[in-house]
Length: 64
Image 1 (cartoon, rainbow, N blue to C red):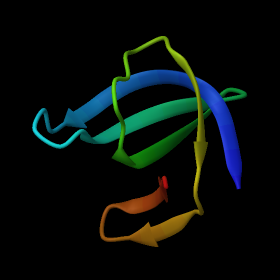
Image 2 (cartoon, rainbow, N blue to C red):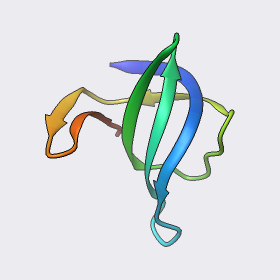
Image 3 (cartoon, rainbow, N blue to C red):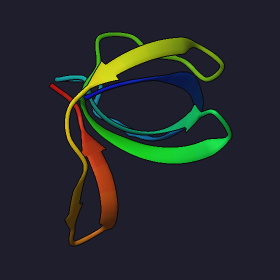
Image 4 (cartoon, helix red, strand yellow):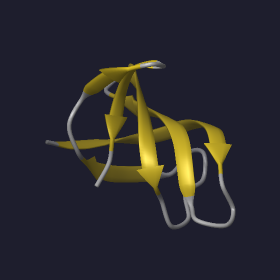
């Protein structure tokens, strides 16, 4: 599944490996995305690919 949206918030970013937790605004719906992102900034329009999962921290969208 591919989602397109705007980076609303960067919750966490590991500067060493790029692992990040971000909130992506997809048509007004906030989606928590987790995974390795090269460079991402708030307000940036991005496309992510992955599948929805529910785990310890609630619903998330791990990206590939």
